[in-house]
Image 1: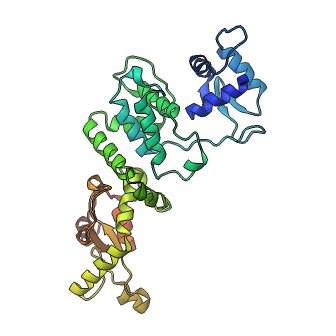
Image 2: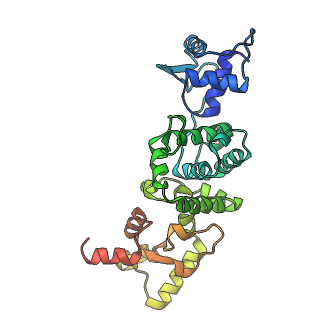
Image 3: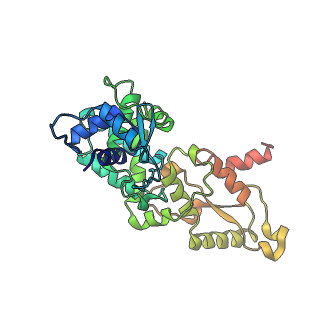
Length: 318
């Protein structure tokens, strides 16, 4: 393996731009490149080689990243870490010692495998380096740089979201563990995970405000879209009230649109996201019939806003 190829291997394994010093340290630690005199690679050599192969590397001061579409390498930049992934990595960070945060640790390898199963990235199957153990190890070392209780330096290439999630759960490790286990439980059902993967993100404008993250939010949407259960809910409601109107604002599509609106109404899953489990069963009583407008408003504050509270909000004029 030539030096420029080894540099590509390091940056791909870490899934992030790196300084010349970090690249040299990683090459020496893993013995991915051997000099003829067996001496160690230096940051100066990395600087020179990445400068020579400008068609492969982008440089910003001492920081090196891969050119996305070079003449000799097709590099697919890994997507940014989602909240779900950060939560799972952070749980592990609080469960192992700093000296154990190495890519060869079985616990890190296990989290890497779990991250690859999360139904949240469209590019996951196209990127065979996706969230590999090296990338997970890098994320844990990023947390070291954020952690005020860590005496060492850590790696300071963390994101704004890394820092935000870290301090959100700094004094709520039990809450962190609950959400992490909730996510793991959901994707442990491979058939369910495939169904969640098929649910698109086009409606998720407000997903950033969901504490439980994208996986549990998709589970919520999956539960409220069950066609058989929705049909039973509408039949039960119609038998009781003789109409299908929104349980929040009382809008009736049939009354306004005639036959065109007959039978039209959406279902909202009322169970709080924090209480949804992958193996639990949704009942008719877990659903509420709502119009699309009210449904969207409920989703904007899905962790805190109930159908009853939204009804009061409308009644009081906001």
